[in-house]
Image 1: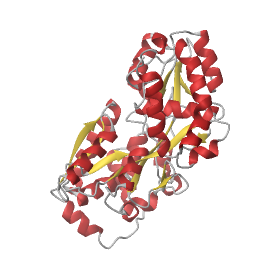
Image 2: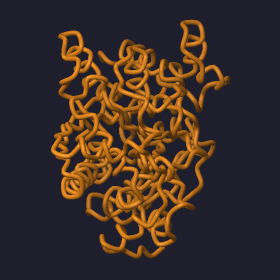
Image 3: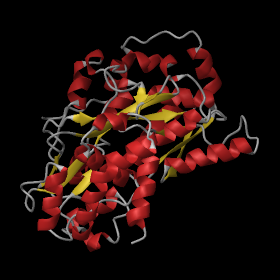
Length: 394
């Protein structure tokens, strides 16, 4: 599909022409936000993501007088701990974190421990554009209740080079067979790396005889029963992995480099468009392609949240509202920028922007892959702890 670029002015004009839900206090929030500095704690491991955030911060500064500083983090769990530490030390209103990129078990921990400001998300003017058919009100089976705003969609996607791997594995069983046929050429990031944990969860879903239990809060008996096939599978898989499964790539980004160098035959991402970005930036060959498992791969919505002790709550809301605008979502969905899926209802936005959001350049995932729901957030900590106990010290 040919991508038709719009000028920033045209995109903004289309965006401003859209109807918004009226909020009587929104002008007051904008006034309060002007001059504030928002410390946005977000993963800093992706060049395209960092560039997008830099673009968004410049736009918000120019339009609303809000300074946004991207605090690059490697693990959102560290940010959660910082918020907890600050509150314990008495920092009730002047915390160092104003907005954070978060989902899953970290959101659960924040919400359970009353560490979040809100509810606020569904009061944003641009909430009216959000696609409520997407899981924007549930995060790893935890109701969001307006305590975090959706930012984008994601789905576990695998990457291979058609010149070297014309027929990829499309199930956990086929993945094992592929690894056995290509010893040392397959791996995955070491949990608790996000992508590594997601891959382990994918295997759990693919191998579990009873997925319904995974949507409920974890308990020891359910965990032991559900994970038994997973550990038996990994015991067979690991001896065939890169470096005999005794060490693992540090990240998906490292796997992409190893795929490009021919050291690995498969890589993975949580962005169905990332391979297209990597091809465009010459980090992967033009023969790279994306694929999924026949029976589906894990997908979810990622969110942003405001800690209860944030200093710039108004500025954080203004920035979050901009990130939900048609302009910001269309720019983010552009595979030349980031390629992150939109959380908006595309039927509510101009046709020109719909075309941009639906563009699928070479390398992007084009085949239909069913989306599987994430296990309940409480499973993550137990999975990571048991994985590290079994395989982390090798």
